[in-house]
Length: 233
Length: 292
Image (tube, rainbow over all chains, first blue to last red; front, side, top):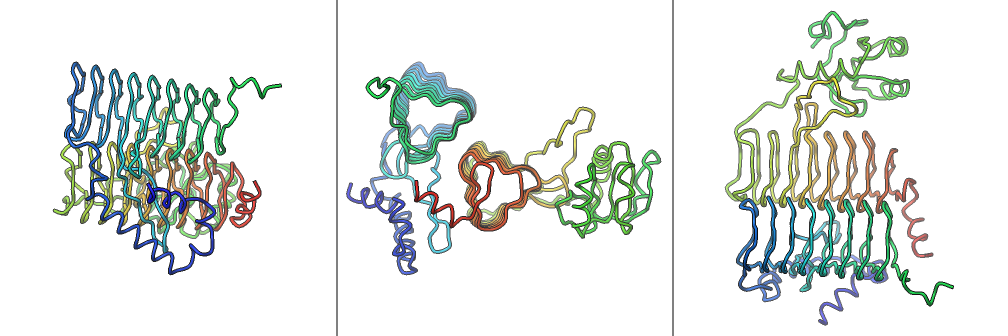
C-alpha cells in the first residue's frame, strides 16, 4: 500500500515535470528502480493472483478459443466465441457473452521515457468481468499494472472494437458503443452511456448517470449528474 | 527499363524515358515513375528530384519539366496500376523470395500462422496467439507481437476501385529492434519495392492500423485506435494519442505531440503540438495546460 502511494505520487504531473526529476542522476536512479521492479516483481507472490483455475457448468466455448485454464476462473452459462484469447489472472462471472476475436488480460500500455529510452512497466494485475456482461467482437481489455484488477460491473454492455485500458473500473448497467477508446485508470460510474467513437482520456472519472454523445472527446472529469436536481435551477 | 519497352500502343508516349522503380509523389526511390492528376501535383514533381517519368492527362503535359519522360493517358491512375500489375514479377521491381530464417530462441505460439516463405524472425522475438505473419516480413530481435494481430496485410486500392484489378504488392514489412505491437493491430505491406518500416523501441497499442509504405521513426508511442494512412513519414520521439487519425502522404517531424482524437491532414514540423486540427508550439502548449 505504501509503495502504491509513492508510485501514484511519482506519477502526478507536478512531480514528473519538476526540475529535480529531470536531473541526470535522478533519471538513472529511476531507470535502475524500474528495471529492478520489472525483473523482480513477476517472481514474487504479487503476480500469482489465481493459483488454480476453475470452469463452471454448461458453458459454450468454441474450440478455437485459447484460454489459460490453469489460471482463469470462469463461471456458469457463459458463451465464448471463435478466436477469443483469455490470458492468466482473469475472473469471469456467470452468463457472460464474449464474441469473436476478443482479447482479455493482455499487457497494458504503460511506459516510461527515462534517460532517452522507453521502458515498459510490468503488469501484475488481472481482469474481473462480473455477471451478465456482453462484450462485442475485437474488443481489447488490458490487465492492471499494480496488484489491482480491471473491473467491468454487472449487466454492462461493451460493443465491438472498444479499447478498455489498464486499471479501469466500469460500474453497473453501463453501455459503451463501438470504436470508443478509454485510457488507463479511468473510473466510470453506474448507468453511464458512452456513444460511438468517443475518446476518453486517462485518469479521469465520470459520475453516474452521465450521457456522452457520439464522437466526443472527454479530457476532464464529469462531475454533475443529470439526475442531480439540486443544482439545476 | 524504357517506357517504350513496356507500354502498349493505346497509351500515348510523348517523350521516352528510363525508370527503375515505381512510387508516389512523396517517395524517394531511385529513378521512379509516378502519376499526376491535378495541377498541385506538378509542383510536387518539380520538388522531388528522384522522379524521371510521369503518367498524366493530356491537359497537364505541357507543364511537366523537359528532362522527364511523359505518357499521356485518359485515366493516369488506371494506367499506373495496370503497369504495376504487369511488371511486379520483374526482379528489378519486386522483393525476391527467400527461405524462412527463424531464430531458435524465438517464442512462437502454435496457433500463430506464419507464411512458409520469405519470413525472417530474429532472436528473442515473442509471437502470441492467433497472430498472422504474411510474406516478405522481417522482424528484428526483441520484438513482441501480441494476440490477434496481422503483419503484412495486402493493401487495397486507394479511392474507388470499381473497375480496377486487385493490385499485387511487391513490398514488405520491416519491424526493427524492440518493437512492441499489442492486440488486434493491422500493419499493411508496401505496394512498391520497399518496406513499411517501424523504428526501434516504438510501441503500438491495441486496435491500430498502419497503412502501406509508411515509415515510423524511433521511440514513438501510439495509443489505442490510431489510424495512419499510406506513404506517411513520422519522425522520432513522437507521441500520438487515442483515436487520432493521420491522412495519406503526410510528413510529421521529430518530437511531435498529437493529442487525443486529433485529425492530421497537413505536414507538421518539429516540436509542435497538434490540438484538434491545428499545430502550436510545444512550450506554448504547456503554458496553456497550466493556465487551465
